[in-house]
Length: 511
Image (cartoon, rainbow, N blue to C red; front, side, top):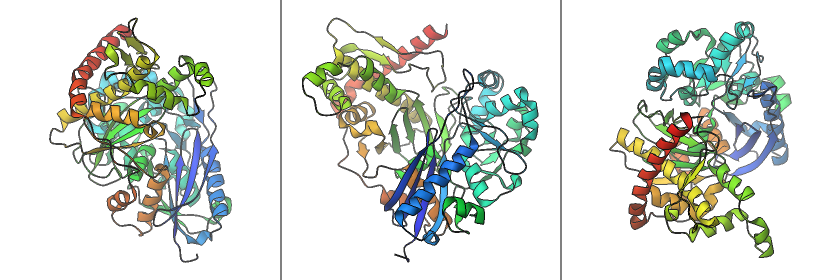
């Protein structure tokens, strides 16, 4: 109907771009996905073309509009979210000055070590994030290793800002970054929402090459005539600044009140909290504190680089799929494997697993690898599977111990779980029992694009209170899983042993 108002949210991910068209009341009308290439020109180098983000955004938005059959003039506004730790660059004409330096690219490792050795405490204290593979070390790499290209760079920016700025015909001076990315810059005063003169001076970074900092719903411009033709949109459609993908997912899942937790149970396993208190994990260097889209809220988070991937690795290489076929199993092997794990007592009868097969991320210990400790003749496949599930929960418990010490008055109320792993309630129950926090699945399956669409709605004046809108639309799929108090008590000494084990493994692999 012509009087219906629509919003566009677009997620610019590492391997794909996803666009989704929503009505203002949150109903999904159309969605489209396009693959985004990754380039590996030499070992350790992972790059992407900034133009691929623009091209796939145009492709998916155009497909959504065409499939929906709506008049493009009914779209009030759009916003992008994007991957957060990599960095792109533009020249004076808002054209790509370099390839996008992916968060998977480790060329900047010597500069991470340099920053950590000389300015690690300042970076952690001011940005909320310890030195890691993110904007600051990458910018230093370009400055020191590619001085000619560095000289041509007018601004460093994110994929979301590259696409939005091109669509709006912005000048380089109008380039922007929203405040949800600031913890990953190594150059910000995140608490005040500004660039840090101290860190820029210490690291020798020219502040003129950094974009202006804006709110996610700030209107950065309107769709130009040229972009309208490329994207299938109406000229003059409002474009909001958008935000980082993790922030968009948290907003889409309704994580908008202090005390809520957010579990992204995917290839990586991410646990984020919501608090109205900023803190920097200077002592442990494990938690990263991201500014929430919601003003006054912060999302301390940490993650296991291959949490869900470790379970898939075990399934592919050790779980007996042939036996499953002979027995006529008709449901997913993940479910079968986890159902078998449910038959094993809590604690896996003394078996512990370390899930850091490709190195530990939080705290950064790239030398670490996976390990099983404590297995005996009596342990079977189900024990090994359960120990993987429990190891993710134990790591989450380690993150929450740091959080509770830093914010002792924070009452943890519930965990919102999304991602493939969230579909299985056996794993959700294990996490609830280890953490002592109820676990809740949601009806909605797409969160990032809806979070971006809500931001677009606020930019257009359709929404006023984003927290209220997000909470209203994040409806539960079923009753929350409550922690079993007896099992929680049983797990606490095992969590302590897991933390001790991780420290020992760190010493083993590092030395």
